[in-house]
Length: 307
Ligand code: AMP
Image 1 (cartoon, rainbow, N blue to C red):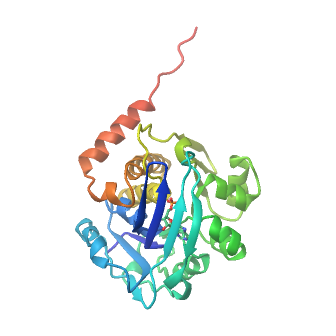
Image 2: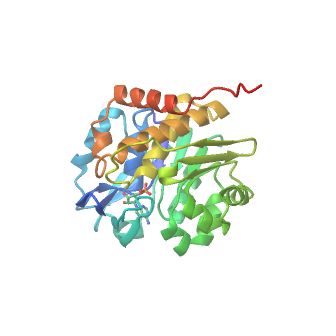
Image 3: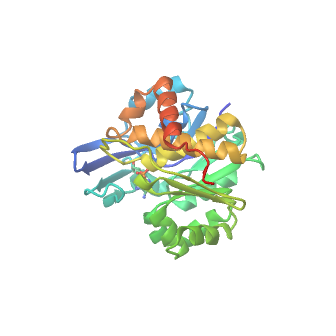
């Protein structure tokens, strides 16, 4: 029985960064998310791929208890994204988005997936995200949403309808500004909370993460790395660490949410060290624990002792 359900893209990406180039490599919001979340909990993916997709490339996830049975193979080509980054690695420039099989996708949530306690609607068409919410059986399920500029610009009304139905939003700062039409992130987040979500997690690339709920604000910087190779998927990997940790704990208490933010940040820091899903594919728990501890040390300081 899975604990965490994700819908999103499973993709082939072509990426150029100042440090190299990778063509037709594994990517997609659901895949990056699952690659991280599966270190902490049992994940089920709902997605579509085309006949050109080599499923054996993601079979390694089964060893981490990922249920791949919700991935549908449809006639046509797999979703493709082409992007590049200049020296500002916070800013992905989309060169091409080919929706392919996504265009006609009708997500079906398998019976046992629909009982999941935690649901992540990764970046994909908001109409598909909505149809997954319709199929969730547990009224108590915690539903979390991500999106990106492509959908804000093409399907804003549909996206707002989904925002009204979720518990939390995990979103990039530029996208929060675009939806809320507020430059200030705190104001923008409060505006979105008025639609319904009780918690907004703002991803700020190398500047870290800002979390707001009705009671408090929590901040975490990014883990200070010397070499960042490819930021693609960092946001989804963050969300995977965040949600995977929450599902593992089985609650959304303030303390769990804060630790989940740190775990998301730790997982994202690994993802950017290599292209595609490669770094997390070979990652182990000792490395995760070591970086979590190193990060905790960076964030500790004493009280003021001034007279
Ligand atoms: P990020 O975590 O924001 O860097 O997400 C990068 C991943 O998002 C890539 O692996 C892409 O395949 C995927 N992606 C790019 N554009 C879209 C889109 N419009 N909808 C869903 N997924 C996308």
